[in-house]
Image (cartoon, rainbow, N blue to C red; front, side, top):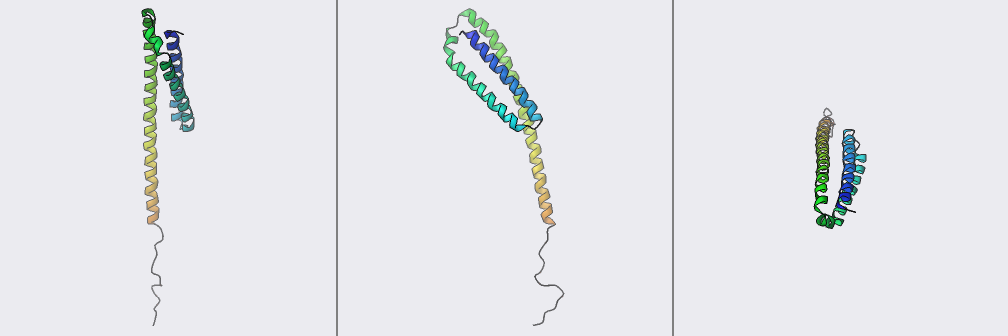
Length: 137
Protein backbone atom coordinates (compact mmCIF):
# COMPACT_ATOMS: atom_id res chain seq x y z
CA UNK A 1 0.00 0.00 0.00
CA UNK A 2 1.42 3.38 -0.94
CA UNK A 3 0.64 6.97 0.01
CA UNK A 4 -1.86 7.47 -2.82
CA UNK A 5 -3.82 4.36 -1.82
CA UNK A 6 -4.03 5.57 1.76
CA UNK A 7 -5.17 9.03 0.67
CA UNK A 8 -7.78 7.42 -1.60
CA UNK A 9 -9.15 5.47 1.38
CA UNK A 10 -9.20 8.66 3.46
CA UNK A 11 -10.97 10.54 0.67
CA UNK A 12 -13.61 7.79 0.35
CA UNK A 13 -14.20 7.78 4.11
CA UNK A 14 -14.57 11.55 4.12
CA UNK A 15 -17.07 11.34 1.26
CA UNK A 16 -19.07 8.87 3.37
CA UNK A 17 -18.96 11.37 6.23
CA UNK A 18 -20.15 14.12 3.88
CA UNK A 19 -23.09 11.97 2.79
CA UNK A 20 -23.95 11.31 6.43
CA UNK A 21 -23.64 15.02 7.27
CA UNK A 22 -26.05 15.92 4.44
CA UNK A 23 -28.50 13.31 5.69
CA UNK A 24 -28.18 14.65 9.24
CA UNK A 25 -29.09 18.12 7.98
CA UNK A 26 -32.30 16.71 6.49
CA UNK A 27 -33.09 14.87 9.71
CA UNK A 28 -32.72 18.03 11.80
CA UNK A 29 -35.05 19.85 9.43
CA UNK A 30 -37.61 17.08 9.92
CA UNK A 31 -37.14 16.89 13.73
CA UNK A 32 -35.91 13.29 13.53
CA UNK A 33 -33.31 13.51 16.27
CA UNK A 34 -33.15 9.79 17.02
CA UNK A 35 -31.98 9.01 13.50
CA UNK A 36 -29.67 12.05 13.64
CA UNK A 37 -27.89 10.57 16.64
CA UNK A 38 -27.54 7.17 14.95
CA UNK A 39 -25.78 8.86 12.02
CA UNK A 40 -23.60 10.82 14.44
CA UNK A 41 -22.38 7.50 15.82
CA UNK A 42 -21.58 6.26 12.31
CA UNK A 43 -19.67 9.44 11.58
CA UNK A 44 -17.68 9.03 14.77
CA UNK A 45 -16.70 5.48 13.79
CA UNK A 46 -15.51 6.68 10.39
CA UNK A 47 -13.54 9.51 12.03
CA UNK A 48 -11.83 7.03 14.34
CA UNK A 49 -10.97 4.83 11.36
CA UNK A 50 -9.41 7.81 9.56
CA UNK A 51 -7.39 8.71 12.67
CA UNK A 52 -6.26 5.11 13.05
CA UNK A 53 -5.14 4.90 9.42
CA UNK A 54 -3.33 8.21 9.78
CA UNK A 55 -1.30 6.88 12.72
CA UNK A 56 -0.77 3.47 11.15
CA UNK A 57 0.55 4.74 7.81
CA UNK A 58 2.30 7.95 8.87
CA UNK A 59 5.69 6.36 8.22
CA UNK A 60 4.76 5.87 4.54
CA UNK A 61 4.14 9.58 4.10
CA UNK A 62 7.53 10.35 5.59
CA UNK A 63 9.30 7.93 3.20
CA UNK A 64 7.35 8.87 0.05
CA UNK A 65 9.28 9.80 -3.10
CA UNK A 66 8.95 13.28 -4.63
CA UNK A 67 6.69 12.08 -7.46
CA UNK A 68 4.39 10.42 -4.94
CA UNK A 69 4.36 13.54 -2.75
CA UNK A 70 3.40 15.67 -5.75
CA UNK A 71 0.49 13.36 -6.53
CA UNK A 72 -0.50 13.36 -2.87
CA UNK A 73 -0.61 17.15 -2.85
CA UNK A 74 -3.46 17.13 -5.39
CA UNK A 75 -5.36 14.53 -3.40
CA UNK A 76 -4.82 16.51 -0.22
CA UNK A 77 -6.48 19.48 -1.91
CA UNK A 78 -9.54 17.33 -2.74
CA UNK A 79 -9.59 15.98 0.82
CA UNK A 80 -9.40 19.51 2.17
CA UNK A 81 -12.38 20.56 0.05
CA UNK A 82 -14.44 17.63 1.34
CA UNK A 83 -13.53 18.48 4.94
CA UNK A 84 -14.55 22.13 4.36
CA UNK A 85 -17.89 21.07 2.90
CA UNK A 86 -18.52 18.80 5.91
CA UNK A 87 -17.71 21.70 8.23
CA UNK A 88 -20.15 23.96 6.37
CA UNK A 89 -22.96 21.43 6.73
CA UNK A 90 -22.12 20.91 10.41
CA UNK A 91 -22.23 24.67 10.94
CA UNK A 92 -25.71 24.84 9.35
CA UNK A 93 -26.89 21.92 11.48
CA UNK A 94 -25.51 23.53 14.62
CA UNK A 95 -27.34 26.76 13.79
CA UNK A 96 -30.62 24.91 13.14
CA UNK A 97 -30.31 23.00 16.41
CA UNK A 98 -29.64 26.25 18.30
CA UNK A 99 -32.72 27.86 16.72
CA UNK A 100 -34.89 24.87 17.59
CA UNK A 101 -33.54 24.97 21.16
CA UNK A 102 -34.45 28.66 21.44
CA UNK A 103 -37.97 27.97 20.17
CA UNK A 104 -38.38 25.12 22.65
CA UNK A 105 -37.14 27.28 25.54
CA UNK A 106 -39.62 29.97 24.51
CA UNK A 107 -42.44 27.44 24.56
CA UNK A 108 -41.38 26.22 28.00
CA UNK A 109 -41.37 29.80 29.33
CA UNK A 110 -44.86 30.26 27.86
CA UNK A 111 -46.04 27.13 29.65
CA UNK A 112 -44.63 28.39 32.94
CA UNK A 113 -46.43 31.72 32.50
CA UNK A 114 -49.66 29.89 31.72
CA UNK A 115 -49.30 27.69 34.78
CA UNK A 116 -48.68 30.74 36.96
CA UNK A 117 -51.77 32.44 35.53
CA UNK A 118 -53.91 29.36 36.16
CA UNK A 119 -52.71 29.23 39.76
CA UNK A 120 -53.84 32.83 40.14
CA UNK A 121 -57.41 31.76 39.35
CA UNK A 122 -57.34 28.88 41.81
CA UNK A 123 -59.72 28.64 44.73
CA UNK A 124 -58.66 30.70 47.69
CA UNK A 125 -59.56 29.58 51.13
CA UNK A 126 -62.01 31.84 52.84
CA UNK A 127 -62.67 32.14 56.55
CA UNK A 128 -63.36 28.87 58.34
CA UNK A 129 -66.75 30.12 59.62
CA UNK A 130 -69.63 31.42 57.64
CA UNK A 131 -69.62 35.21 57.49
CA UNK A 132 -73.26 35.91 58.24
CA UNK A 133 -73.97 33.48 61.04
CA UNK A 134 -73.92 35.06 64.45
CA UNK A 135 -72.64 32.95 67.22
CA UNK A 136 -73.65 33.55 70.73
CA UNK A 137 -71.62 32.39 73.56
